[in-house]
Image (cartoon, rainbow, N blue to C red; front, side, top):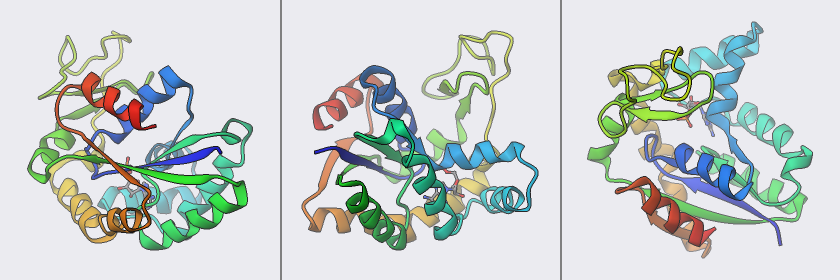
Length: 214
Ligand code: AMP
């Protein structure tokens, strides 16, 4: 049976990085709600402006809107089989919505927690940089680019520092995770659908463990 793999973890746990590698090496599509919302930045519509305003505070976008983009995106051809959700669900209501989507698509849900201790997360987020061209993710503390603030692959491109990765926003995002998303770990555990991987350590080690569970 095809699966919906839900990657759960705090912001900064490395879900996006790992999901990107899984997509590259295993061809499993990565559906990231955060990425999809960031792409809306270029659209000048009332809805896009509302999303941008919410994201800038570090708070969560509404459940209905978030579910709508997940539903649209996962109805495409490339999501016919197994796909990975990175950053969704993030609330109990979204988890309910996903149950309905999964049964409509005839898929089972398998959740994987990427576990990182809270005190490690702040540096992961405030140090994060990414290439606006290829999406490669760096970290000024843990995985710096060869030249400061410049992509290793696209050497004429300055790396991006997400505004919501600034320190004061990071605190709001971690609080949203604690209050709204963390309870989902229990939810999937109780229904016997949770696996865990440590998100601390070498990138390749984490990936190998994750690939084993997928
Ligand atoms: P991320 O890149 O996953 O950390 O997401 C960045 C921002 O996008 C979050 O801080 C939220 O404002 C918004 N966002 C992403 N995924 C969701 C979601 N499932 N529900 C609500 N808001 C979300």
